[in-house]
Length: 469
Image 1: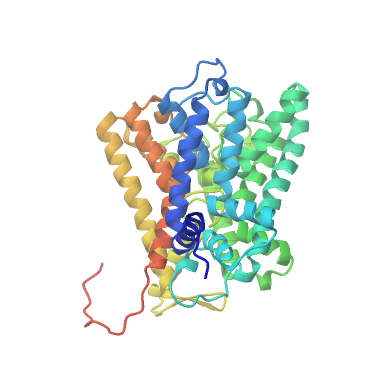
Image 2 (image 1 turned 90 degrees about the vertical axis):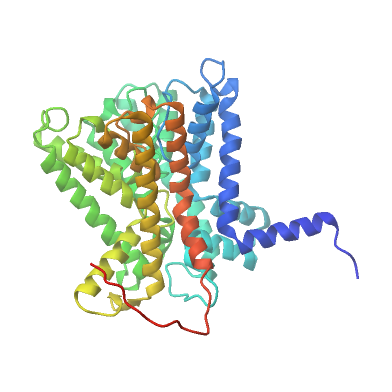
């Protein structure tokens, strides 16, 4: 019997670790990617002046890029060279689809097949409950047998939507007088940043030149929404778009909750900012509607802005913070605790109000372990935001509203800012960078770790009910 070589044993051990603990593997790879891109952004050739970039600025940009956040400590339009901009686009593509999904796509392209281990890893990247021990109910948005199709959908949708978005944006830039060479690059850059929900813009004044352009703003909103609803939803709609009765619970909850929050945000921003002289006040009624819709879409995780968030009323900042905290769909390029998490919590509250022992929706029963996971993810996110806000307020003595807004924007990988991020001290920027990292992979990793730790017990301890409420 042949003895395995050290290389074969190392490969086998690595494969076993990747399959046994995909969440830890993802964390390590994300951290490694941040370090790699920090080195790339530090290169003199990556900066426009050829002098290189300080470690903190390079590190923060790498973190914001890989975590598809959109916050920055430098002027993204003028600081980076063409090579630096290319690093930004590549980093957002990797971070947007997820490390494990990207690795699985590359493996599928190279070997043209997926083994069981690779299917489990790829499927787990879209649903942390796949990591739980014991049997898994296959009545989900994407079944294990459909993993190959999901990966193809991820790769195809990323390519097709970004290219289509760029093609649609290009005429608007040409009409605005942008030279054709710059217009082509800026169109693709904007489309890529919109689909990955990153929010970087190639112009120094952001979207100010197109603030009143309904055509470009509408295209950007559509691309952002397509990236934010999640790849499992796109995969399902590709097969059952005109057969809503066949949509899974995940698809229905994602689309309904996302749509309701988008409409609620639009109406609230329209009402709260209608007379604000620094935001919607001077605009025509039509422009007020357009800008409030755009703001509602972008506070879900898009990160682009035609209105300076620092000019919003305090009430609007609070609405923005709540929308950012929820974010987009699961397994999407958006951040936050995810809309399905909020939906499950609301369903549990309704079930409790009606005196029912379990959650039921659309004729289906949602098991209690999903609720426990939703509560854990929400508490994890709220705790990170609270601690981050406390630390930064203590370090900077800055205005609470501004700090809270930027902290939630970092955690939810949204990218909107009141200006606090740029003016924060180095250690404050490091705290924000850490929040971006934990927000992008922390909730998913935490959920996966909780799901994997579920164990069967052959006994039950005595029951006692504490007083709640």
